[in-house]
Amino acid sequence: MNTEVSKRIDELSSELWNLALRIHAHPELGFEEHQAAAWLAEALEKGGFRVERGAGGVPTAFRAIHPNVKPGPRIALLAEYDALPELGHACGHNLIAAIAVGAALGLASCKGDHPGTLLVLGTPAEEGGGGKLKLIEAGLFRDVDVAMMVHPADQTLVDRGSLAITEVEIGFHGVSAHASSEPDKGVNALDAVIQTFIGLNALRQHIRDGARVHGIITHGGLKPNIVPEYAAARFYVRAADNEYRDELVDKLRRCAEGAALATGAKLDFRLVGHAYKAIRPSKALGGRFAHHIEALGYPVEEPQGGLGSTDMGDVSWEVPAIHPYIRIAEGTVPGHSRAFGEAARAEPARLAMLASAKALAAVCLDLWTDSSLFDRVREEFAGLSRR
Ligand SMILES: [Zn+2]
Image 1: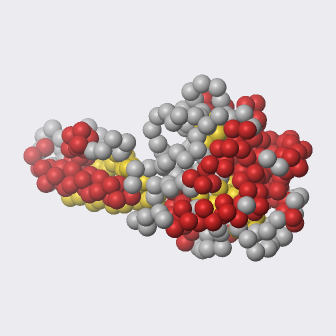
Image 2: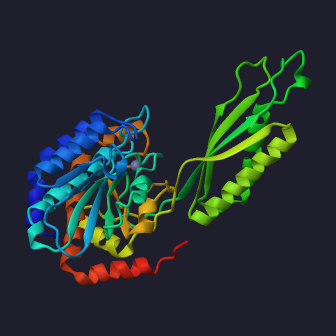
Image 3: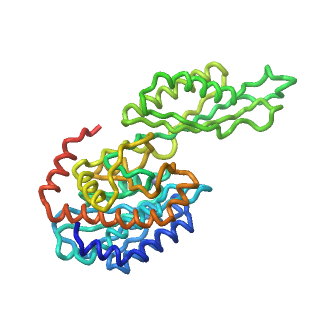
């Protein structure tokens, strides 16, 4: 661990914590994070970075580059800063942003002594909007060799996977009729939705461990005395790999087709939103992060519980990437809960933010000072399957 960089991050601690708290106090949904993006861009500019706002044509994205650019590993630190509806920063993305900025500003003072490029990418709308997918499409990862970020959690985990996910909307079109006097003239779209859930529930026994299909009914009719002419549901289909995820989408489609056949309603089956790929964390980089975070008093734990999904998954198919988790609270505090939102602005989160920024900066220095690490990272990536 480089003491100069760690000292610099400690000097910045109140600035970083203010940033994290300000974002927490002004939660903004995906693609609406104008304030958070502006605050982060300002902090980086003040620290000597050149900032392009609206990077990749996404208004709340940004790309900050340290002006000292040399040949060598081009590292992107990723900042997320979107919040959840109703729950605010119950995923702690305010901390992800402060960690990325903290590591970048910590490294800024000594970047001149090192090769390579240091970037911070502001990546909006992780919670379903797929901000990183837009930045990939816009080519922002073409001049990047390695992408890294740290996510808060109630465990410290490195190399944890994520599930591939696809969002599906299933609409059924039936025929309305009086539900009591002339039900025989109606085609009940809600029944088709219910039959889809029943078919899916029967399927569940036969899907692989760890795969998830979960949904809600978004339209269920208008009044009990009208046979519902339109009903709809939304599902998230998740699996450990992209191929099995696609297979499950097909199985769900067949459940819906069966329901359409049984009820006579017309099916409209659509993939909506963004599909995220399963993450492939770089073990070579993860090993270095684990080493540094443990030295700072955060032992890497045995993973408990299931997996979520993230658009960092897609980034990990473009470049070697890590998405470790840092413990910000004692005991168990589930993500996307109000309790986690509270934890994301409490003292242990401040300490975790500083430790994560230091560990992330230390991995950057490892990459810039030990060319054999960069070789291992690239070899590992080249050996991964392309499917
Ligand atoms: Zn999150």
